[in-house]
Image (tube, rainbow, N blue to C red):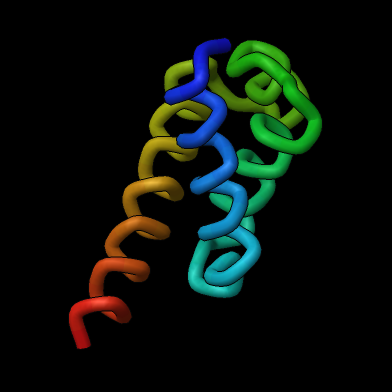
Length: 76
């Protein structure tokens, strides 16, 4: 993992810790499994009885939501 990737992960985790209550239960669970448990999308899909693409989409939506909340609060 390069420096930029590490910084992004740290940023996402920081945003999650601040705004996790704004995520759905599913988004929060996928986020935690991916970033805290270091599971792959396939492993997450297996645990949650869903597809790999759904796990990917759920994580992407969670990250987008966290970034939007941060931007809204910083621009207020």
